[in-house]
Image (cartoon, rainbow, N blue to C red; front, side, top):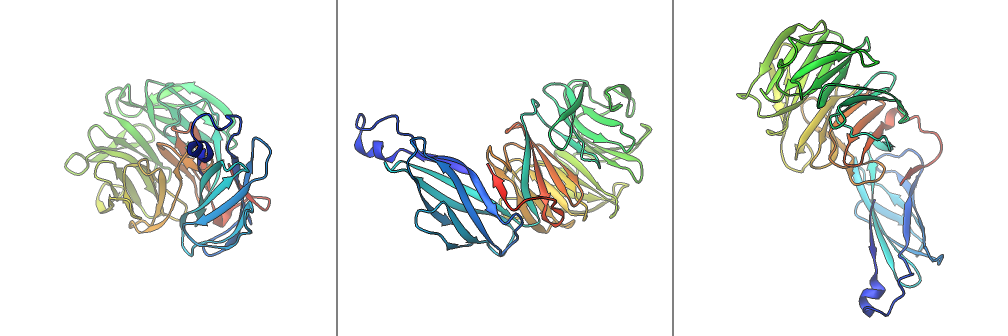
Length: 390
């Protein structure tokens, strides 16, 4: 929802001819009914707006995609036939008060298998990497505050504990052990859920150059860590022993994240510089690679993170385009969600994502100081008859 105030009357009349007390209309948000929609459906979109001076407002609507089926002149709502495909689609509204002062807003409606849900805001945290457990407990690193925090899915801070300097990579084992990549010490440390230091993976300090990402395969007991400095994937057993490693600068330029698909027996690595996703066997055999630079579906501007959902599909976070693409395991585009902004559902310089399979996707967005939450339509538990975007 991009909002721009246009002080048209004063600009045309010249300085000193208008009262500074008259303010443009204020947009409070949008309400969409029904609560669940999909491609090709008809929805009602209503704009909630007020005039600071209390006068009546008139609304003028246009849609860049789909078709406006019904819009009474000046009304605050429309009936909108959505496009027959997935994506984020824009409707624009211009609101004018009696004096002619106007406010414009552009509203993106998500259409497809994933939709904006809510944001965990005001957490007093600089969220970086995120790990989500099966009970939807959120673990988040804060490399500025040198700490890890634990949140409930309702944004309640449950606990936090200090770590070594610049914690980045993060994972949580089935037994509750928190695995933290500490860039300031070049190590991967193990902590109990209450923050008690347990041990390090490997030999400790200096074992890994830049531990930017960690993934756990709880079926095999292996821990995969990205060493961005040496451009390698380092593999450990859960008891801390190094198992193997692969990659290097002959293959990668700057790997930034790793994700495991245990059902397919594959490990995925995202390379930020090459703008590619690599698929490996658990032993490190390269199976395939895909991705190119660009802004079309299936292309990337700056890959920051990736994850695997419950259907084995790949979610790729693009911090330059401020969105997430849902892809098949071979790289075919399914849908895109998320967009730049500072309102509900929007992102600014996102860093990481975590998944509750087939239910919800969480994205850390330090630029908005929030953790955004997106829900899969197919298992939506939303109650009520409307979505509200603010």
